Length: 606
Image (cartoon, rainbow, N blue to C red):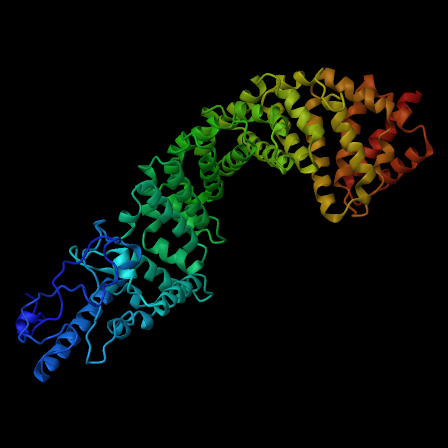
């Protein structure tokens, strides 16, 4: 028997003994004539004793002491069980077997709710969001102290319900506070309260893990939480978790959490991700069938693909192969992220380039270019922007692979040359893209034709689908437009146009090594006089003029084409421009090429 029981005091009890109900339906408020109590019922010492009136003064004193002790025990029980009573379950999932005690003593001025008025939820009104929510007093309850929703809530004063709501609102506001320390302490309070109860509240562990990932994503939106998470090896644990997880929602939430980290301005989190072999871990997840998960994974890979120093020590060949296998998907978002990753890893790493070439990357990427307009059937608001981004990514990647004339570069060029309809694909990109896109396509064409001399023959009869023009006609049209409009372009645009002029001349020199293509060039220059294009630029940049005069000098030096000079100098304007360059002493090369062209006019007359 408890030390506070009536037997220990040997005081007659005015109550009948009843076992407290363990169900919400039977644990109702006790009536005054049949109150519920955990104490026994000894026989009354007086025949005149009444349930509400002590037999004598001595009994009254003892009765008041007993009631006070019972009220204290009730307050302690409610204080210990309060937080558990809110949910109705403890970690073992059992309902409470204890009911509250309602004091009904008379003579001492105690009302039915007197015990409740003294309890006042224990320390709940004094709880600190930052500290006391994590005290063992509220979070650690022995297994035998189980709680019933009804048995606890039936005795809670409405003012205490208001206090609970106030505490919850304060906690929510603290989680969104501007002060990172307040957010940290509030999050710690939530963690302390929830740690022992989550598994009992969520029967599906996959759902629980997803909730944890969503919580992590919320916390990681702030810099101080990110630093603490990484410093506490949170990224390492999350990657280990993903390597053995199969639930799609859980994996996607985890990938989103990591993306939040590595997408920050600082590269240190991305470098930590690479160091922990996150690229390899994500590569192994690319076989998953979830489109949304693949979007998140490829977005993460694209975000760390440019970390050259971190990736130098990593073997990511298997991840590169897995990404390339997804490039045939009819999903512009997926392909955009995938091609962004490929162009980044191909930028400066010979090993990654070799892995890409071994996996037939040039062939696959050309197929992406060939079918990129099929994405227009997908109802996405930004589908055209995605197509433009994919086109740029692929062209940069192909330029990276073919840039150097080493074994890897030659293999990439050979794959492009052997690809059926590759000439048509590149010509269509050249005819439909922006200036930057055209410049990249010109680079790929130049690299491939330089390495594979036979490749230029594919452009003899190939025309684009937009203008029905062959390669020679199109690049000379670019040259004409750039020279005519150069002074009208903005300063930023002139940079791209100047680069395009240089690349056109480089490609034109390679194509002119084919007699058939040179005949096409000659026919155009016979029909259109190039000398009026050579008016000086306002930038006083005569490098393009020097290259143009050099090409015309070489072209007209052939006896079969010397008659071109008489056509070019048939107008006073052309004669004036050529005379200007014949006297241009600031650049001897320009002056030499101009005089060579002028001297051939005499040969034609003779």
